[in-house]
Image 1 (cartoon, rainbow, N blue to C red):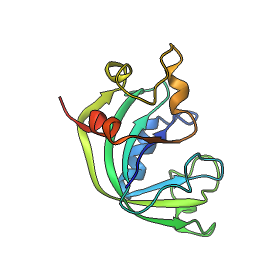
Image 2: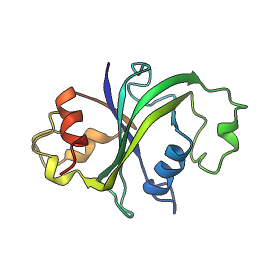
Image 3: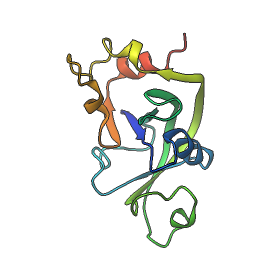
Length: 147
């Protein structure tokens, strides 16, 4: 079982929060042809949802979930007809289950020095670029523990 962070980013005037909420409402997450780690994700993996960008609740974790299934995207699929089809045609559609939202989005700032995938520099944001980041069990536990 692996652990990953899926990153939602602001797109034009739409916030990462709105994009992530739309995807989670439908229990799906799109991955694109250049998304790192897209071929490493398997059923049963655990996912944290991170909100990048500069709009409301940016730089915070919104929820966590488990991967139910991974499907190759059919370019004629219903995904392409939805309101949250923002930037490109996806190559994989991840179906999610066991979605748990934090009571409030959990800011990353207090966790930065404890997360193993964050470089020990001031440029920590680069560690979350690309849309999908593999993380350790300890990092997953740190992120998903409330309080």
